[in-house]
Length: 257
Image (cartoon, rainbow, N blue to C red; front, side, top):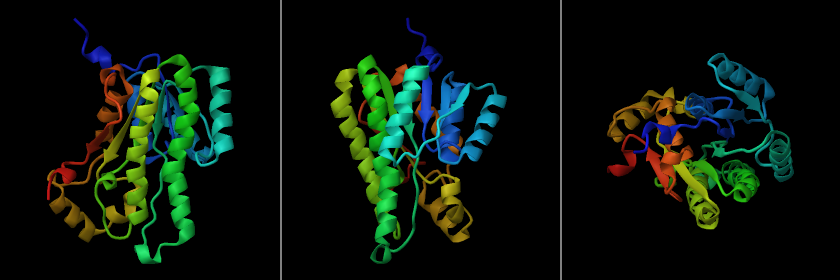
């Protein structure tokens, strides 16, 4: 009989987490490390990455830094190909890098729209493709894209963000459709409202927090650590026949009116 807990072990695996110097990305990197994975932290701010790496190493994790701009196609390919050649396989990719820009749609600047789409969608395509090419050759790999509750719902002032996260969910389906036959599992996690640096202004707004607590059946903001279990599941052998799925971790906000 199979050991149920062993299905969730990431021992011997290496995980690249984009945008992982803080917030959800850092929490997921820490959680994957606790499950046994070696961690590659990614971002553009090498100072923040170094601090995050030191924190994880102090907790016993094996960590390296792979700094590159996830929206730069040449930089992405060069970084991934060079790392694979010199260090070996990236077994797990978590596409977490993202941004937010809040402005009424009729006033939304075109350059902000383009920047948001590049960061939230193009990066998932670029890093996903660069890593998948190596995974396909090995006939194995796990890709976990970070979508959002806005994959399914909209709120005033964030229409382009909503569009970008809907695209992430559908790109995830496309990844699974193209790459499942090569042994890859490609899925997404859709967080609800979590207390993160990206949401700092909302967390600090008593009116918004009161609305959220009333709107969410769980009655509170999520804690980033509550995303770890879903990520370990989708990154591990436990999800070997789960593909193209978006897993909502949202306190039931998408389940209720």
